Length: 372
Image (cartoon, rainbow, N blue to C red; front, top):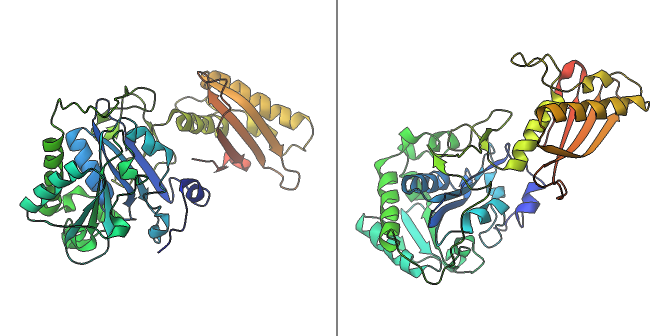
């Protein structure tokens, strides 16, 4: 069946992150490889949980794109040769080995093993077989041999792709329940889940023992604000911000942001959309854009909004650079103010802001909209 969306940009234009899907990643300093689940969440459950467990147990890097809709998550499937969500390449840019986790149909408990990394693939097959699991050669459609397959987009241009049948994946959870609620609950995992994951991790440890040097790979230093260290399963090192409005991710944990630009946008929304006095802990926090409510669209109203935004941002977010403020007072909708604020981090003032945050303030300070 053909994919609904040809690439990530196409999907993002039609679906909303945080509502329809989530993206989780950990680029672990010093990690030699990564576990991926690009069809995670409810698309091909429980591939996110398998990748997350294996990566956190072995301190490897991790990436997952997770479908979180109540139904129809298969429409979020982007084939492995076209998957181009940018965060995954931040994880892969230092990876020498890759295990890409997938789910396929079939009631028989079987793993179809593919990908261009034949050395690691042979070790995975041997370990799984020794643990009592059935491993078969994959059909051409899921053999993972295309160089453009995300499994093969690491430093060595070769990775392993694991396609787990539905019957096998159902054996990982009590009652064969692969709903989002069930797979997010680690207490519902069976021993089969851990036996399978342990076999894969053992194969990686065998093929990539500590200290192995790979002559064909160019190791790049892991650095930058997007690089974090895994702490209790979360990205860390002081670069985490809780996603607002509050929500849980596909693993049942508090959803967080790690990208500095997205964190700035979220904080900007809080500053601009909060009416002073609303926040009990700091009554002065917020902006005075509500002073423009019920004003006619005269030249003074936009000036009030712009001045209120700049004053509030200078006080509460001094590291932000405001590149544009677009205030609108609606004559046909009395009591509504629209304001669009473009912001960038002050350490990149020459870069045009890519993040735009739009909020609508209703009478009484109720906030509508917001990109995050």
